Amino acid sequence: MLNHILLLVISLVCAALTLSWFPLLFRKQSYSCAKGLIVITGGSGILGHAIIQEALDRGFSVASLDSTEPASFLQYNSKFSALKCNITKDKDVEGCVHSLKKMNRTPFALINAAAIAPKNHLLSISRQELQKCFETNVIGQLAITSALFPLLLQDPNPHVVNIASSLAYFSAMGVGAYSSSKAALVSLHETLEEEVLSQHPNFKFSLYVLGQIKSTMFEKDTPNRVLAPLLEPQNLAKIIIQNLYTNKSGRFYYPFYARFMPLLRFFPLPIQKLARLFSGMDKIYS
Image 1 (cartoon, rainbow, N blue to C red):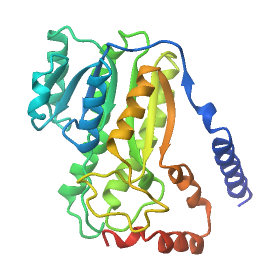
Image 2 (image 1 turned 90 degrees about the vertical axis):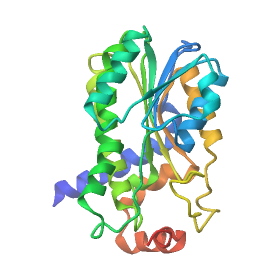
Image 3 (image 1 turned 60 degrees about the vertical axis):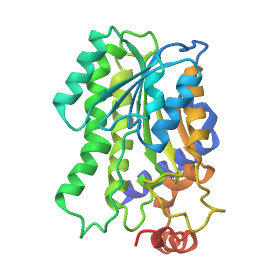
C-alpha cells in the first residue's frame, strides 16, 4: 500500500513539473530541414490534407501514402507524389518503400496522420471494427515507421511525428475504441522514442496531443466550446510544419486544456464525474 501511495505522489510531482517546465520539453536546434521530403500517411483526411498543403507552400516535397486518391489539384504539383498504400497491409507498406527507393527519394520526416474513429459503445462494437481501428491507428503507424526507418536514418536529423488525442487520457462514451487506440499510440510513441534515442541521439520524435478538430471524423460539435474549442486544421498544420522547419521536437498539446487531461486520472472518481458532466463530453456520441 505504501508503495502505491509513493508511486502516486511521484506521478503527481512529475506531472506538476511537466506543466511547470513545459517549454523545456522541446529540443530545438538551428538545423533547418527546408526543401526536404516529408512522407505523410492519412493525407486524404482533413488534417492530413492541410499538412500537405502547408508543407508544399513552405517549399517541402511531399509523398502521401494513402488508400484513397488525393485531391486533383495536388497531382499537378511537381513536389507532390501520391503512393497508394494501406498501412494495415504489409505488401502495400513494402511496395511504397520500394517505390521511394526506386525514385531515389530519401525522406527526413514521417508524419503519421492516418486515423479512423468508429462510433459505438464498447460492448456493441464488432471485433472487426475494433481490430481495424487498432490496425490503422497503432499497428499500421508502427509498421510504416519501421519500414521507413532505414531511409530516415540517411538524413542527419530524421523526424517522426505522431498525432494523438486528448481522449487518450480521459475517454468519452461512444468513442472508446478510438480513445483506447490513441492511448496505445501514446505509449508506443514514448517507448519507441526511448529505444531509438538510446542508439540514434539525433533522431527526433514529436507527439501532438489534440482536442477536437473541425473535421468529418467528429462531425458533432463539442457541447462546451468555451472549455473545448474546436481546432482549425489549417492552424495545426502551420504549427506542425513550422516545427519541422525549425527542427523542434517534443510534446505539443492543443488547445490549452489538453495538457491537463492526464491529471484528471489522478482525481477521485466523483470529481471525474463532475468534469464529465460539466464538459458534456459523454453526451456527444452516447
